[in-house]
Length: 201
Image (cartoon, rainbow, N blue to C red; front, side, top):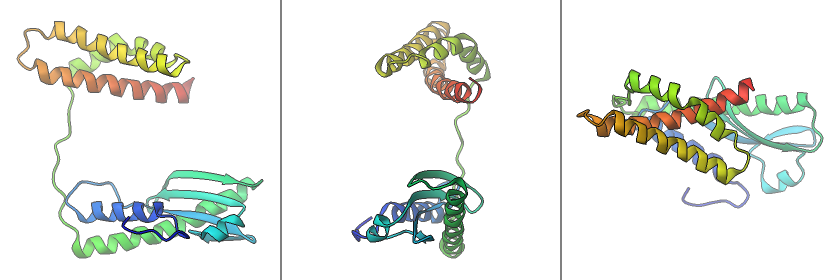
């Protein structure tokens, strides 16, 4: 964003520009995406309301996504029912579809061929051992109530895992690379357990 109109917040324009830049580049990107702000003034939904319109709006909604799905929502409202909020989401998504279609048109005209990227793959044996040996410790760490203590406990799990594999891999010629995998695998384990605890417990 190089300049800003005070009446038009730049966040959604920045999202659009970032998405389009990635889409026309050779960088792999699972887009395009777009986002809009949605308000409601005098019972009518408004896309990207001005500052003045926002003052009179009973809905403040930011929504982003692709042509087929919404993947980000932030909102506040003044006693708005579920049906009206859903209507605002769908109204915003219709505009997102138009913005995505516009990006796709530009990509067809000037887009570059995407580069092939080899993603990091993990040693299956190391991955299984990390899960078997450190899942319970990670669950315990994640469930620590106090934030700083929780972060310290999670970091301790990672340190313990690395120390364990430093000893196990002492004679392995690929030790350095495998230890990097261990660090990433512990990070992945943390994310997986957080998701599992949220959805299952």
